[in-house]
Amino acid sequence: MLSKLENSTTLRWLGKQLFNREDPAAFFDPLLAPLDPMLVRQYVPARVERIEAETADTKTFTLKPAARWGGFRAGQHVTVSIDIDGRRHNRTFSLSCSPLRWQKEGLVTLTIKRLPGGLVTNWMHDHLEPGAVIGLGETFGEFLIPGQPEPVLFIAGGSGITPILSQLETMAAEQYHAPVTLLYFVRTQADIIAAQRLHTLRQGWPAFSLSILATETGAAPRFLNDDHLDAVPGLRARRCYLCGPGGLMELATDLLHQRGIADDHIHCTFFAAPKAALAGDSLGGEVRFSRSDVTVTAEGEVSLLDIAEAASLSPRYGCRMGICHQCSCTKTSGTVINRLTGKTSGPGEEKIQLCVSVPKGPVNLEL
Image 1 (tube, one colour):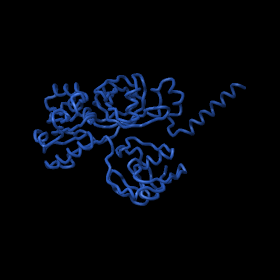
Image 2: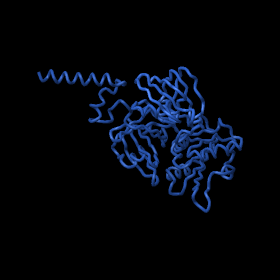
Image 3: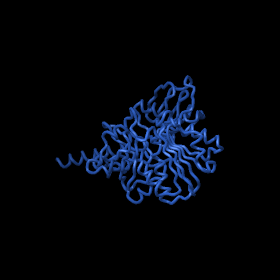
Image 4: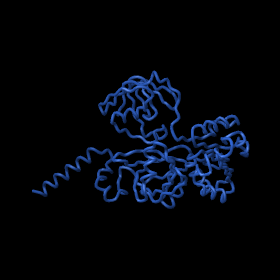
């Protein structure tokens, strides 16, 4: 009798797992995770191998992902999943090492700056330890180095150096022979991230020129200016890569345009999604999530992703910046505005990105 009862309980448990999970490979995760978290299938697990302080507020986390992880290209991002107080949180970070390290050693690095008020970054700095296991998603992003050698200028600010580190180490390993210049802006010398790695690149790679500029050293701030760009040989022939605070990238873009460098030779990646100026008084409306049978009313410039989460729904998302498209969803009716571009959608059925779409009147979503 007991054996029959145990079998019945097991079957009910299996049935619940089978019917409540979209990913068949993850059916047995509740059993596998306590035994070995590296065996779970719902996401790609990655074990923390080492944590190193770069500056007072920046650390590099060396990870060993499960072998099934798909790898990455220099300059790309990855979504990280972490459990904090029983809730899973996703955040996007740039990979800060060359893909060759993953290929040769099975290791990758994330160099992460603590953000004031940031839930995930602060938790990683304060609580994540070697031996812990976190989740990795697929990599994405088009902030990629040229396929063929051509002169390059990198302009980085603060922790914006992280994807550029990946690119520089890849180019050096491939003996990239065209001229490469990095202008790296930091507040003080104590804020230089990966100082030793940059020094090693400069010593061993003849094509590489490095200028580190501390903006708060001296009587007046030393922001990017004409003199910095005029000192770059053959600037107009360079492909330019920008990563850092929005103000630096806007300034750099303007100065490069003044020198005749076209948009197709300027590549940017962002810490946070830039926003177009939207007319707030015309935004908001009733949002219906048809599959969930939930209807809510929103006001102002609030994204559909934020609206869904406020309604206790859990749509898939990744970067929350309009880059990765993991939050794409079908809008069956209604109008939305893309807060990156300011563009208004059509009124009918189409694919939209929840994280950058703001309702303008009633909207119906297949979610």
